[in-house]
Image: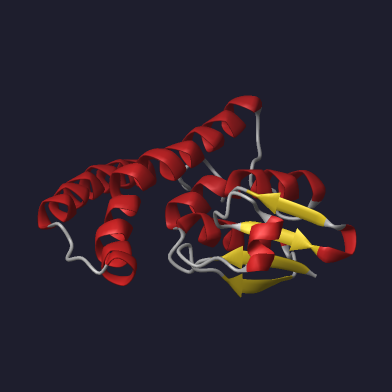
Length: 169
């Protein structure tokens, strides 16, 4: 069975969990703390970033949420998450990149850093200006998501896709 090294507050770990569940892939969650990785996690993923997947029987390790999702998209036919025409698939990948890169950099990472890393790891108070800036950015991103919801059945088009999971995560 696959072992998923994940941190509960990591949106990339959540995206992978959603995709694996949708595709019916069995996995066991191994909780990893980014500030205190286990030896096994370091062996599986030298970058020590969640998520990572390990299948001991095949000595197969996968890292990076997008690489993991694309692997299962190519190897499991059930419930395609990157589907449609080439243009539709490009739109799904564009939105996944937007949520994984821009939304994460503008909103999720600053909030996690100020509210979790500073408190738990650094033992420092959060910077209220950084929190306000992240929340302003969140409103802009949510306005765009609201527009997508108003103009499409799902975020990237007519069907559930990996873009929906990236946004939800």
